[in-house]
Image (cartoon, rainbow, N blue to C red; front, side, top):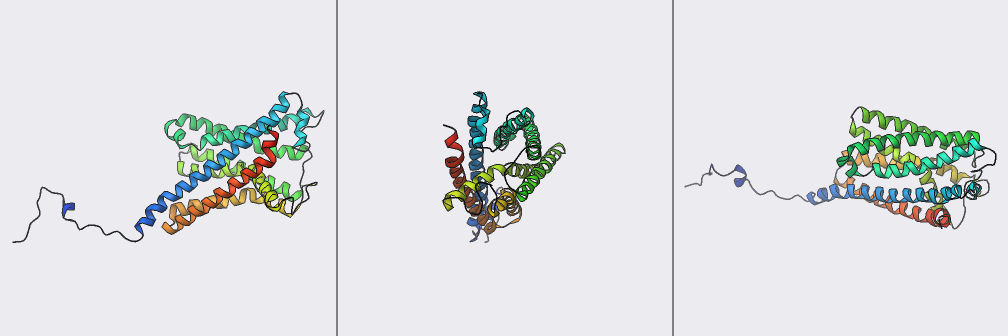
Length: 289
């Protein structure tokens, strides 16, 4: 007599056991590895940007508070020019918004704030967008009204960076207002990267000096040369390219693609940490003592 199914038991009781496929472990691991790699890079980047903000406060803020703004020129050529009150105020506001935007960006990236304190996320987002627009506009104003180092190609890269900041800020704001939050996060991430262009520039320059044991590919007196021209565009184009690759892989790639992207982000994290360490030793920590 053949056994019959007990109607009191679920059908799954009689289902054959699932045979694990060779790629199942890789798929599970890739789904975990990619977000972990992205989080590691963001954590290192935020720490480095907060270090730059601390340096701006410690050096520029302390010099201003002590009544010696002329010390700005030790680091920023023509940062302070006697008798040009309006221009000096413009530089001070640009530095202030640099601190605000890096601190605000760090807070904006915290998922706990977005999930459990959405009002703070919204108002901090408005502050971030406003600071980005003011910082980008202030940078362009400084270029047009003050003597700045570099050649025309570097100035063009700065203008493109400022234009991208304005465009991404407006797109991040519009998609948030329209409650298209998936698109909003993408534009906000792009804004985060282009706002950090000046930070990426300092990391790249410092790492280049350490690796080459001195200035190679540019004149340190005139601050002109092919390396600085290339770095002027790479400071935002390379991070944006990595972000677009990450978004495409995250949404469409298979396990092998996600694993490859996770390793690429891991390498990016190490390079970013190296750049931060070089910038800290050369540019920031000596002026924070």
